[in-house]
Image 1 (cartoon, rainbow, N blue to C red):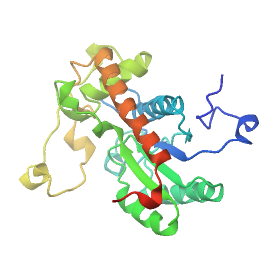
Image 2 (cartoon, one colour):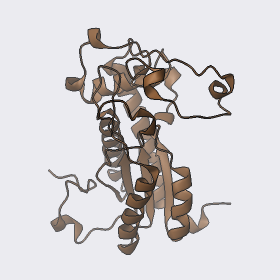
Image 3 (cartoon, rainbow, N blue to C red):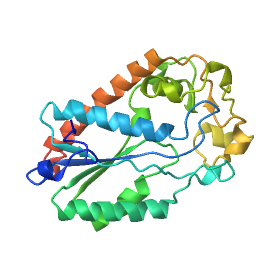
Image 4 (cartoon, rainbow, N blue to C red):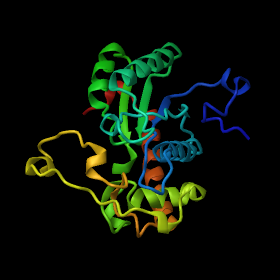
Length: 254
């Protein structure tokens, strides 16, 4: 049966008499994830987390709708990685402006970007959009920062690592290559110390920091760890969906 909180599945028969409090836009990327994970890893994660979180919230009375996932993200540092697809921030801004124009016109005034890609940097865009849509509540979530990874995973990383490999082993195991094909995800660090200390930033040229395009050793990944992490993320995300839906935006601060 069509899920009424998933826009791509529902229908006009249902929607003509429906109303929603919160619209969620999952946003991923299409890019290499080590040797063994699919290019759609970020898209799969964003979509599944948004759908399951919405199910949990909907079952408790939350009027949330999940929009179709945007499959391309900012990959300016990966321009030489074959078929890593790039969407410039200015293009993202244009897409968001058009989406928000539709939502505002149709009376949905709460909006979330459910971000699934570290290269997508939303704060400046949301600040500018906030001036254009002053009657809307705009927010961004990064699901990969919601649950403490060290409580579940042994090896740190931030791309096709133990965490992401575990998630895809849980969500789409048929798309993961055999373990013998996995790269070790070794990251080559910038020689200038300031950039590894976190207070200075420069874009990482991906083909120079990783041989296999991964950052973080995935060798101890399991589907069981992926399910544990997925469940924890979706539980927290569903609670946030409900909190935003129920909130009086004019009285958020005290």
